[in-house]
Image 1 (tube, rainbow, N blue to C red):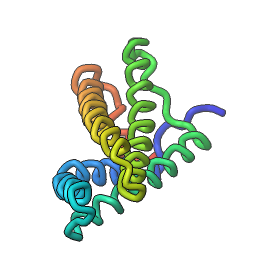
Image 2 (cartoon, helix red, strand yellow; image 1 turned 120 degrees about the horizontal axis):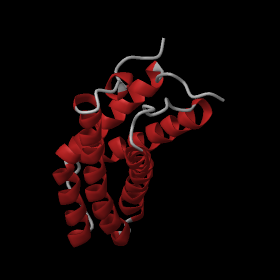
Image 3 (cartoon, helix red, strand yellow; image 1 turned 135 degrees about the horizontal axis):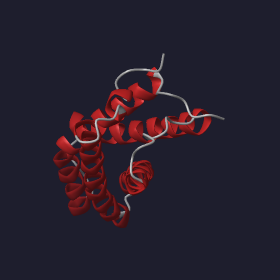
Length: 163
């Protein structure tokens, strides 16, 4: 199977929806942290839309990342630019694999912590959260490096569907 030239509308939409959900999870994470702390102290928490949206957001991220991975396995992904140095290709591939893995593990650890009341899972979730942030920032930096320094079409592929 030859690699596609670009991404489908579905792949592009999934990329940006997951990005938005992850950004919202980071932006509004204090509410879930407060609820978790309250739950650990006295077994209760103050229900709020932001607490439940964090839980629902995590479940959505899990499902959407699985969907995105299934499409990638079935359809493939565009090749990285031919003239890109091998070390950059390796870094890009490892960053993508790491993002998929961390997003899955972060969502799963959050679900185990929340629904199973497992404190160790909550601690793992916090560590994974920091690693997700690092890889997201690396991914964004790599995209801008591709666009501004290498002058490749990598960034435009995630904004314009394959014809």
